[in-house]
Image: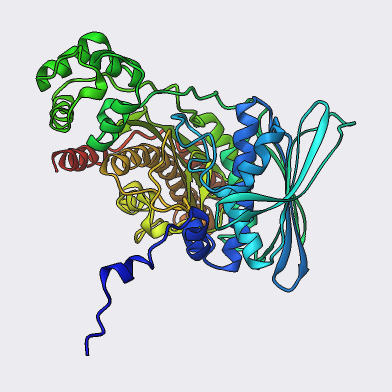
Length: 535
């Protein structure tokens, strides 16, 4: 008996799914692996959006976060900001539709990228408690708009339960979001509190108030200066691939291939555009829509052989060395801190910049690695991250720091990647992909900063050795004076005074002066970096 199914029967089982249905079954991809992490993800997505909105509007951020336990493993989460607000017609789409936003196609540094984060929080809330999300928004004038909504999972569309508009007597502007979701609140190394603390370090211009289930914690603003506003750029030719180029050729408004390259890409002039076309054997005046597949392949090869100007870097908004040190000192109270900002460089045609800070001693009692991407703390998947790979690839012992893979001393290592498009390993945005150029830049910055720490530590250790010598001579001065008194018949008290005077002259005023960088460290680093570049 033949029980095989026909292709026609199997075809009846095929049907399209919405992005909301996909993430309903795969919510771990968005960071909702467990109930502890779920609370962090909700707070993280909302605070990241608040910081992006306030900075875009050039407003110093005032952010309020509250987590209230309603019942066992059920929490109310409120996040409120003083940003520009959201216009009424956009509110329901931003919160009720996955993959809806303004940042995916925009090439400039921002915390959000995919248009999934905040709507993912709405989806998680309704999945775990069945409760809708409340959004209150105002642009500062006229009215305040209040929505209570869910997501229609089958259609990936907002389902508005109620809508209300009322007068804005206080002229408030911003957004307030209230979620009711399952979760577990804990205060540990990967908690909401740790996320907010690290956010305060990487965003010292922000004032954050956190009402936790255990009480209020306030992170004060360390500077009134907003970070520089990043500018939007066009994609760079070095990052384009065959499929992307084919799509862009069909969508462009340019009438000629050469003008397509000039208008659609960054830092491409008419002469460079014609050079690419000529190398590929394609007419620069041909309509972009008439370019055939084999010609697109030839154009990609020609691009690889053409020397192009690097993309502009004003699309980035790095923290800068001063603000990194400011943030580390403000929240960690170390005895010493230093920072290094590398010059911007490029991966896959996208600009990025690496910044590193190291804090030592003081209130720091144990080693810690802080990872950041576009000022956002990365608390999970540390082992899969390019930052971790770079940090563990440093020979810390060479800089006077005891280490196995990571330092074993009271050292906090701060690493920040600023980019128009951070290559995260998953939609949950918790780890940076291991691009060799990214790892190399992190290592170079770490080596530069570690040399500064090595100089400081060598000075401290020299002072300690001197102090120990002085203490030994002072301790045995009475016994030495007594022995000399027996030999010389001089007064013991006078001999002891002379010994102490000599000790003071020799070591009392000696300080650990500025140390020079050890040549062997620099030579070894240069050798290792050269080997990596050859590889």
